[in-house]
Image 1 (cartoon, rainbow over the protein chains, first blue to last red):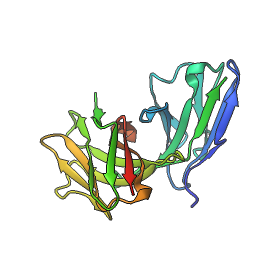
Image 2 (tube, chains in turn blue, green):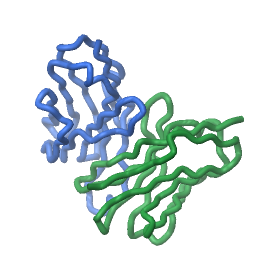
Image 3 (tube, rainbow over the protein chains, first blue to last red):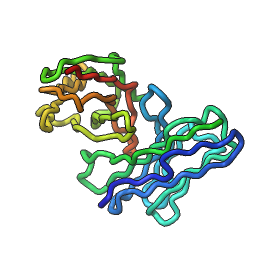
Image 4 (cartoon, each protein chain N blue to C red):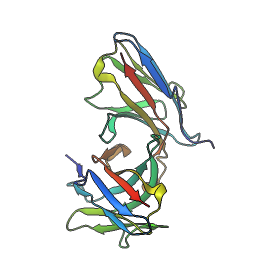
Length: 117
Length: 113
C-alpha cells in the first residue's frame, strides 16, 4: 500500500488550455474525494465518488470541471478553458465507507499544484 | 450549514513546550466527527487525531491530544513537548454526510529553538 498518488505534482499552463489530473487512491478504499486549496485557506470540497458513482458535486464545480472514476479505481479531474482563478492546489483523498469505519480518516495525496499563466 | 472556525492565524511556541490550537464548530447534527490534519510546507495533509461526538474520552495520539468540550462546541488540539518538525499549518475539520470534510482556515504553528 503506497498511499494516495496524484499526478502530476505541478502543472503550469496558459489560460484557456485544458488540463487533466489523475488520482490513484489506496486500493481498498471505495470513496474518493477531490478538494481545492487556495493559498492561505483550508481545502474546499469539490466532489466525491463511491466506487464509480459520483454522489455529490459542490457548487464550486462549474461546468468547466468534470471528474470521472470509470472503474471505481483511479479518478481524473479535468478543467476545460482554464482561468486565472483556477490556480490552486488540487487534493485527492480516499477512505473506506465500510460499516464501522466512521472514525477512519481520509488519506490525502500530495496534491497537484496548478498555475495558470 | 456546518462550519469550522480557527481564530488563530499564527502561533509561536518554544521548543519542548506545549501549545493549544483552537477550533470551534457549528452543526445541528447529533452525530459527527472531528479531525485534525497537519500540512507541512511540502503540501501533504497528514492525519493527526480524530474525535467522535459520542466519544466520552478525549482522544489522544502520542504527543497529540484533543480537548473536546461538546457543550461549547470546541475541539482544541494540544501538542505536548513541541518539536521543530511540528512547524506547519494545522487544520481542524468536520465530517459531513457522505464523508466529505469541511475545513477551517488553519493555524500556522512556528516552533522556536
